[in-house]
Image: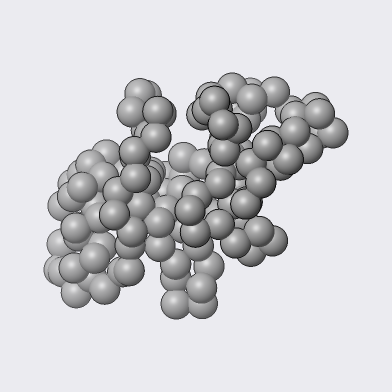
Length: 127
């Protein structure tokens, strides 16, 4: 385990929380049409993901990553300032993390805690 965490690799908050899915269109439609939530960012032409930002700044996201496990629970996306430094640091500490994935709005690396709960290391492109 590394003794100190580089500044850019420190977790500074939770950017987004939400479930993963194997049917992004269906889940986005549920939150949008059934619960009346308005997507604010993160959508894509294939409807594999969307973000819903609330007035208090909290962001709820629906994602269809390659490793989706529907019904597997909600996932936290932990905010960092330097995605590459953070992933390298956490891997050096023993975390099993995916390669960094780039989306139109962010960079993410997926992992799981010792109990199998999913999480991601996350860096927004803007803000």
